[in-house]
Length: 230
Image: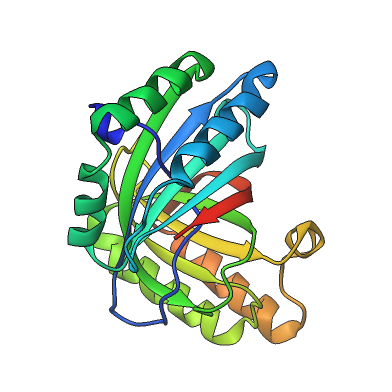
């Protein structure tokens, strides 16, 4: 258990294709008086590590979330290779890791983990510091239809940042199993997100009409990047 405690949603840089990306995420709940110490401790530890070329860690604050969403921070390990991701996580052991865990444990009220796969994505070079995740409950048999609807709307929608969709394979907390994730350059872009013309509005309408037959929207949250490690 020591090897897999602190980690989680920025996402990846993959084109809209069958190429997969893999993530292992952990959400942390931290009280206000402990935030500065927590962020300092996390940064001190991960800044000291050598990351493989194909593994990235993003450390973020959860700035906006729905009712009942108590977590305040998120760490995200990301890689196009599940083997590379697993191998790197397995290195989080030994006395240095134990010392880090001992410092962090008293600062964290709760930890929630999840992992999954990105199956489609657009704008591979535009992974911006503001990120938003939408979580859905979809029966497995309807997942292909959900991905197809996502692909169609992204063909019409001129979204300036990264956007991806995929499956939550581990750590489902309330039945959510599919996600859409998007990043924004700044909060203004996040606040003004949405269709900008009739074609984009029609594409969004068709997406919600199609997926509304089999997908239940569960929740959303927005994170702001503190630091990226790679």
